[in-house]
Structure formats: structure tokens, C-alpha cells
Length: 545
Image (cartoon, rainbow, N blue to C red; front, side, top):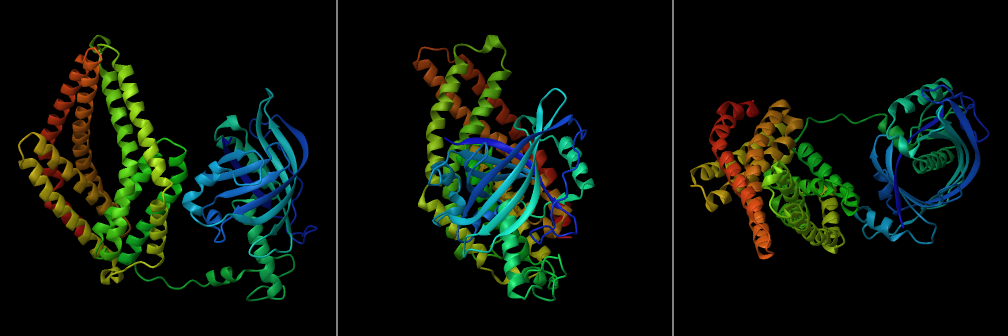
């Protein structure tokens, strides 16, 4: 059984110049925290001894994404802990009981990072934790402050000598939400007491940084590369020395813009995987959008990335988007139908329409959910992630990739726009009916592609690209609402048939069908004027300027 909670904490370390027993700056005494915001008293909870082993892949994929996986004994919550980043100072923490193997549910949530790599012990931390509760006047525990004295050893690729440091953690109580004011009030006191925010996001990151720093210092005779370190001053690592003299940057190229966009979408795919598996609201939608943005970028920027390489990847992205789409389409459709039903006065709701809609949606949900999870567990999906990694590691760049970004990306956006213009002409010329529905849907997909291309181009084109994307979004919204109405009408037809067969009134579903039909017709009437406005020549000239 895995329990979940949101962990909101900040870490601090000493700014004192004097060296402590470990030869590193030690922590001054914890300042008085009574009176910091709503803190009325500080209650000591004693000292706990914690033994934690942290796990990662040989390439440290978890650490690179700010994720920690550990097996810890001691304290009130010993067991397995998996921490997933959510935002600044916020992580989702999953806890499972002690055991020899990584819990299956945690291993599943790490699949998009770990893939086929083994999880091995990376570091061991011994912590003496002095815990104190910050308590309000009514006795409510607001937060826990811990003074942690840590001894750490790196275990892989080889065992290191131990390093030691002391830090302070301030963690909000679970029922406090993200009480920024309380954290800020405590931070003022800690800063006044000679502490500052820790430079590393986790104990594991600190342990690896300190052991690698110590190794460099030993190899360089104590002074590190460059020059000897001053007494009490940490030696610089080779990486820090290299970063001290950055190479001059070349002008922004088309490859910079496109590859940065591609990397961000791949990161979104991997990052959203655990949220989709845990059924976090909107996670399926955001993951599907990432697949679509990637596939759209490959098509729009084919002058930058070789299509002979990206087209097969695009086919796999289309497959994944389709598997995710079963669940997402159900979510959107259910939300629309429930909203339309809620708009009706009670006297127009004939029969158990709410119950029928609920059972219909949940019956579809089980199958859609199984489809999504099956896709994420497949070898095909893991191979796709590996292929995307290989793509950005060795991108198949074409000649245009080395050119200045602005003209290349502007041309790509306008090329997609011309494609949209052709589809809009077809949609506007087609008489109302099923053929127009298909034409409008094709135009919608083209509008989305233009919008994505314009959003990708923003680093090179700035505000003109932003404005162009906003206009395409307006077109996409109208076309999308029309398509959603088409899909809703088909669902309402099915629901009406089911109600009729069950001997229930189908009046309400028929009424909703008529309203959806009227809404689609209204959207069709909006299109000519909207398109005339957004397709004005000056808007395209603005993009090219």
C-alpha cells in the first residue's frame, strides 16, 4: 500500500565562516522562532537517527529530473519514499512500508525515466535529526523544523570517503497548504541567525556534490584545478572552472529554436507519465498535447529536421496520441454533456437522464483507462522514449538549421498558414451537412498546427508570433467547438436509443441534440467574419517584418 502526501519544505545551511568539526562551515545555533508569524511556542520532539539508502540508475536519471527514491529506517515514517517535484519548495511524496525490493507501484511511476536500466544504491546517508514543532496559540502544529547533522557516502560508481554537513529543514504540516507567509516569517528569523537557502535541492544532491568536490580536492592536492583553495574554502570542481569562462554564443539559429521546443515537449512527455498513471486530473490531456506538439513540429519544421528520420517517429507519436485520446475524448465529451444537462430546467429533464449519462460515461471510462495504461506499459512506448532521446542527442539537421532563426521559422509558419487557408476555403464553400462537418474538422487540425508552429517561433519572432498564435487560437476554438458538437450529437443519439430500448423517455436527449445542432450552426455562421479578420494580409506581413 502506497500513501501519498504533498511535502512543502525549505532547506537552509550555514553562512558562518568558521569551520566546524568536519572542516566545513558548521551550523550556528538555531535562532529563536517563537513569534515568527503565528508561531506561539516551539516544542522539542527529541533526536531521531535516520539511515537512508538512495537509489538511481547508473546514469542518474532520477537525480537529473529532481526525483529521489530512498529506503529509510528510523523516524516516524520509515520505509520506501519516492519524491516527485511539483513546483518550487513542493514535492509529491509517496510512502510504502519497509521491504527488500522497490515497491511495484513506485517502480511503475518511474518507468518513463528508468525504462530498462537497473535501480542501484547510489548513496547512504546517516542523519541525526533534532526535531522541533512550531505550534500556534491554539495548539495547532504549523510546521516542523529539523536540524540535521548528516554523514554521507557515495556508493557508486565507487565508494567514497564520508562527508559531513549540517542543515535545517522547515516543513509545513500537511493541513497547512502552501502557507507562504509562515515560511517567509520563519525564513527571516533563520537568515538573521546566519542561515541561507541551501544551494542543492536535496540531501542526495548535496551528498554527491560534496563527495565529488572532496575527490577533486584530493586529486589536485587540496586546491582543486586552477589554484589552491584557501583554508576553509571549498575547492572548485573542473566543471565550475570550465563554466567560469563560457564560450561566446553564436546568433540564434533555426536549430536552437526548434530543438529547444522539441526538448521541452519530450521532457513534458516523460514528466507527465507518473501523473497519467496516477490519474491526476488533466494529465492525459497535457501528455496528449505534448505528443501533438512534437509531431506538429516535425512537420512544420521539416526544413530544419530531416523528415526521413522524424516521419517514423511522428507515426509512433500519432499512435500514442490515439491511445491517450480514447480517455481524453471521453473526459471532454462527458464534461460537455453534463454541462448541457445542467443548463436545462428541472421540468425538461424527463426520466433518469443524469443516471444514464453517469453509467454511460463510467462504462466507457474503464476501457479507456485500460487502453492508456496498456500503452504506457508497452515496449513500443519505451522504445519511442528511447528514440526521442536519441533524436535530440544526435539531431538530423538539414541545411536550414544553421541559418538565422527568424526567416526560417517565419517561412515555416506561413507555409502552414497557406495550408490552413486552403482548408478554410473548402469548409466555407461546402454546403451544411456531414461533408461540411468533415471539412471543418480538417480545418481545425490545420489551425492547431499553425498555432503550434507560431508558438514554437516566439523565441525568434517575439510578439508578432505571439499575436499570430493568438489569432489562430481564436479560429481553432470556434472550429473545435463545432467538432465537439458533432461528437456530442452522436453520443446523444446513442443515449437516446439506449433510453428508448430501456423504456425510458428519450425526450431530454433529443432536446439536447437539437441544442447542439443549433450551436454548431451558430459556429458555422461565425466563421466567415472571423476568418476574414484573422486572414488579413497585414497580419502575415507583421510576422515577416
